[in-house]
Image (cartoon, rainbow, N blue to C red):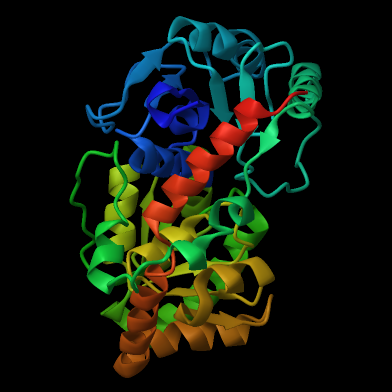
Length: 360
């Protein structure tokens, strides 16, 4: 099947309900890589977001963000929408796939599984069970498969300028957003224990740095923001910049303006916030976790996991010692050159064709 005849439906659930998640940015990168190459459709369970540019071909079907809504979306809506646009392939980014879809399904794992803080409802367990049943016949799209031929396909060493130009994502309207003082950026993953750890370290850092830097936190939701406020003194709150309901263009604008990204968790498959930061030339301060180290390379200032004093020293160093920050940023810009959009495009098209040729 030639690329021009290939029709793919992207599952955009996370793009609507988790717009700054790794899954959402992976979808946006697929849009950037393949737009104009094949007939690509983005299925979303809501009205088209204002921040999504006109370049993306969108198919809308309203569904509430609930276990029942998601179950209907995956099992009934995606196959129906695929038939409507005559797509022969569905690409999903979460561990749930249509069990009885006639279309081929490919799956990009974009989440790290964490212990759940609550018991799952019956509908959530049913959704997961049906999802894994569907994924038995789905093709798993991993980075190794996409970039396996990277060295052979590299024609010339990409320039730093070219890599940074590729860092933007198609489908995101441009946005400019700034904070009133230099800042570290942290994106909450919903762990209050991790957040308390960071706030404890930052309280010590802020006492040393004064007004030289702030800590910007992209909160998971309004409840988390209010919890931070309730557990902080007015003086400490003055050193924080709290955000909620952030859109992708605002998030990228914040990230591009940060001193460094703070990341205390492993980097999920297909990359998370750390990969976004490196692609923009922003260094990462965090823990020595294998997946994070692989993602950031020498552009990371990584310390032993759980070591408060080492993390504090790292944050102070990148603010106070200008040459360290300059060196990390240069390394981040060089690391950005390692990921080539052309290789990503070629590899993804190759795997789509292989998936369509596979017999289950």
